[in-house]
Structure formats: C-alpha cells, structure tokens
Image (cartoon, rainbow, N blue to C red):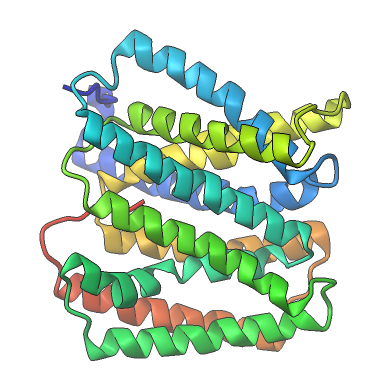
Length: 314
C-alpha cells in the first residue's frame, strides 16, 4: 500500500478545496513556465547536461531518503516500478534533454513551450487509437488547426532567431517524449504516491543524465555561485513544484482541465521570455497562439463530452 499526502481538515471543506485547487493551478502554470525561462538563462552558465545532472541527482537522493523513510513505494509491483522508471526516462529525462537542447539552439522559450503544449492534440488523435479510443472528426480538425498555429508561430520566429530550421525538431522530440510517457502512464494499473512517483522518475532521469554528461565531458560542475543558484532554482520550481503539482492536480481535477492548464504554459512562457529575454512577439505569433488554443479546445471539449471514467496522464 502506497503512502498518500494528506490534506489538513481545515482545507478539506468544499470552499477551501476549490480555493486550494485554484491556487495550486496558478502555481503549476507559473512553475512549469519557469522551467523554460530558467533553462534559457541557466544554460549560459554551463552546458545543458551539466545543469540537468546536478539539478536532478541531488534532488533524487533527497527524495529517495524520504521515500525509504515513509515507505512510499511499499507494495508497488515490480512491473509497475519498471513502468514508472520508463515514464521517468521519457517524461523527465528525454523531455528535459530535448527542451534544453532546443533552448540552447536559440529557439524562443514561448515557441518551445507551445510545441510541447499541443501534446493533448497528438495524444487524442494519434495515440488514442493505440489506447482503444475513438478519434472523432472534431479532434482531427483540432489537430489540423493546431498544426497551422504551430507553423505560424515557428515562421514568425525564423527571421529573428539564430536557430536553424531543423532545430525546431528538438521541441517536437520533447513533445514526443511526453506522448510516450502519456501512453505508458495511461496503461498503468497501479498509481504510486506522488512522492514515490517523483522519486522513481528522478532516479531514472539521473542515471540517464550521468551517462549523457559523461559522454559529453560535462560531469564536472562550475564553481561559480550563479551556477548553484540556477541548480537550486531549477530543482525547486520546474522539478519539484511543477512536476509534483501536476500529479497532485491530476488527482483533484479531470485530465481535460489539466491539459487546458498545460496549454496556458505556452503564452505565459512567451510573455515571460519577451520580458526577461527580449524575445519577439509579433502579430503572427499571437495569431498562431490563438489557432493553437482553438485546436486544443476542440480536442479537449470533444474528449470531455465523450470521456470514459477518469484517466491518468503524465
């Protein structure tokens, strides 16, 4: 039996629960968005593999101690433990590696976040049939509209970015990692505790980052204080807070609502990038965001109208 995180009785009243969920949702969007901006700033201090390794490994060690002390993974079948490790390799390690690579190549933070945010469309239309889900015409329409929106945003960034066109495959690869993680999670039969899931995911990701950093000669971290500030910031906000809130919210709101929150990450990141990194936002960029919003809305509303019992996604 896995350990669950309890809620104080005063916060378990209906009004308090709604308020807590709203605050958690806002914190989730802000902390998930911060991951793109912090990564763009932090990779000026050190190579991405170095930052990813020293962000994840110490955090995984702390969580491992907590997990052992609380027996958060007690009773979890070995098969599900392996599945959670695979989810960590895709949804944590692969996703972050490709996101950091995209930002390092010069792709705007908002564009990277937007390409990742259309993941619900891809899951509903392309992965859905693998899960035995029917794909409806409105969902295919949403996929097409969303693809046009992404195309407009990317085209608006090409002239003012140092990134070569082929580099835009990197955020697409990050999205593909999330899709694979979603597919694996939706086939899971046992849900571990939030702490247990985070621990397995980060341990698996840390192993991957060790190999990646060793292969690229990026194991040794810089000694500058600014690097360690970046490490601490990325560990607390996009790793523990954003990823932990994702799992917590998943148990309080339905998948449709959570995917809508994920889409809000893209414009939030774009405006933060414009403010902090001087990344351009043009009329074409805004039109692309609007089309993507329409595509995601079409998919999510159709999914909600014909939803089965509550599902789980990465």
